[in-house]
Length: 241
Ligand code: F6R
Image (cartoon, rainbow, N blue to C red; front, side, top):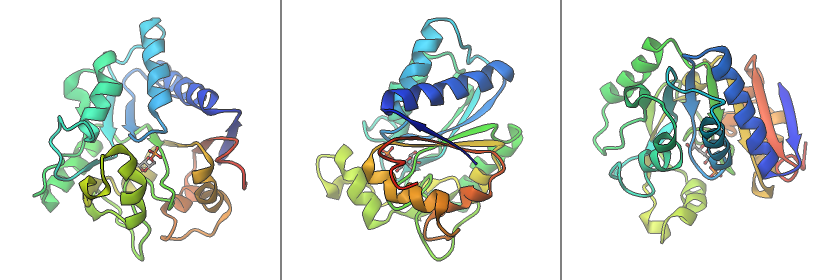
């Protein structure tokens, strides 16, 4: 495990963008695993700036997003499809056929999940996975539970996650109750994993992730077992480590 504690969110975002950019420069046809949420927004912004400056080329890159809410149209402003296009994809040159986001229709079947997993395998697996972390230690939408799923699956969101994510909606009752997410195995099989954490609301989860016991009650704690796990946290998120 490598830990970078950065002065602030701007520096955290710059560090993450620098690692993504180095990866894409070294391997033009990199397969990126991408996250949404507030934490990676700064990283996407920096990557767009690098692209505008001509210092990064995404033309051979393939992407797989971690998760999507169920029941929101792709053009709903809170869907992760909308987020990714409006905060990143619309501004860089990733070919549209190389972009993958789990489908958010309500009737997702085991086959839909399996197909997503199979696409990752067919692309050669994920080279670099970007993660954020929930206040309850979730990664993707792998919520604390007695058992965790290894592969892409449909999940009921926890009360903590619904409450935390209600800040993006006009009221809590509008937050979808279910999501589709890559599983723990899909994440752990990535060659390299970067976890981004910002703000004091994440400090406890980061302590458990880095120093706690490995437990399904803190899904991110499994990252301790990953051979190339990089944590980039700002001072507030790193306060207890
Ligand atoms: C989003 C995702 C989630 C978020 C996590 C933190 O694609 O996979 O695990 O990374 O909920 O969200 P923010 O960054 O909004 O605090």
